[in-house]
Image 1 (cartoon, rainbow, N blue to C red):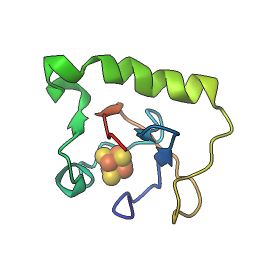
Image 2 (cartoon, rainbow, N blue to C red):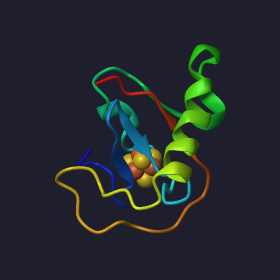
Image 3 (cartoon, rainbow, N blue to C red):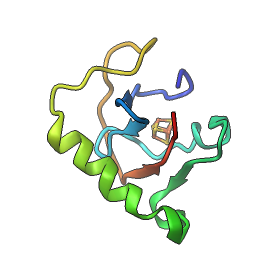
Image 4 (cartoon, rainbow, N blue to C red):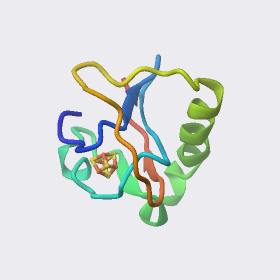
Length: 88
Ligand code: SF4
């Protein structure tokens, strides 16, 4: 998670989530994921596409989420969303 330059990876109860508007699509997190669960949205495998909506829903339902452990201030910016499916 420390690899994210804008600290837009958040910790949910069941997985980590990437803020779709804060993410700058730099791709730095993809090779760091230990379970190969992060994809640029357009490259998300079919079997994981439901997680794109789950990711967005997390931020809609949790507007006050805190940055993931070890992260600093929340960044801003935002090009497109990145899908993440990161089992705990
Ligand atoms: S692609 Fe998005 S979530 Fe991943 S490191 Fe870059 S800004 Fe952070």
